[in-house]
Image: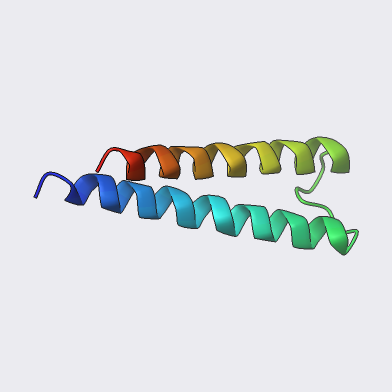
Length: 65
């Protein structure tokens, strides 16, 4: 029973990170802004960094099982 929160948190972090990374890659490939009113390179870099951090947090949660 104690592994259920780790599974839930790992799934949430992994889904969020994967979705954000896919969305960011799609926006960059289409030459569309990732965030309105922000420089394209800065917004894409920040979004990709947050996505990778979320994936790393999900991986860390799954290693705690």
